[in-house]
Image 1 (cartoon, rainbow, N blue to C red):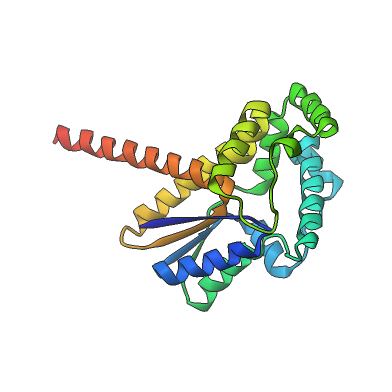
Image 2 (image 1 turned 30 degrees about the vertical axis):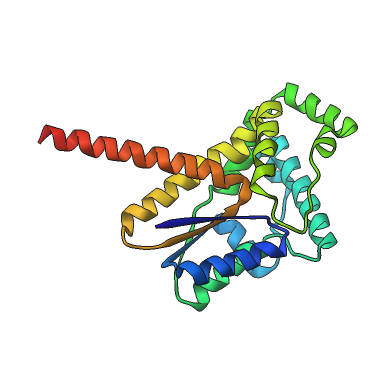
Length: 230
């Protein structure tokens, strides 16, 4: 059984949701939306450096996104007095305390940032500049950053991002949804009797569930076809 918990990286409610799901389902494996580098950064409570030499590996767009995104998360976190990523650390701590298997299921952040540089078109960059000035996002959506957004709000948010910034959506959301769904499927195949608790940002939950169902369906069809040949 796989349970996916959608979180907000700066909401205390997320930590409570993770503890509740852990107590309710008693998982054998805890999977988190982290790669090795981001996990080490959270555990050491130190921000990984962003040397300018990274630009040649991830592109200027990816570099600027990482720098601005980090600054924004820290600023929002300070508003609600919550360190960004605390919910992931809570999940990791539960795995360590109760001797559960910890699985890192997210794609390497450097690959994601490089893909962002490749996918973010010039047209989208101009559009983003215009949107920052006119703020259509803030006019359409009102979000309480101290809480995990409701599922009904996340759907139109993702639809807005997919329609207006297709490149950003592909690199940051859709490709990672598929990657993490594949990781969960591999975990399930390796541990068919295990209960797996996956802790991911709420924006990934729906896409991961969609891809996981698709992968499972394709796998079942492949097995049926192989059996039919026997």
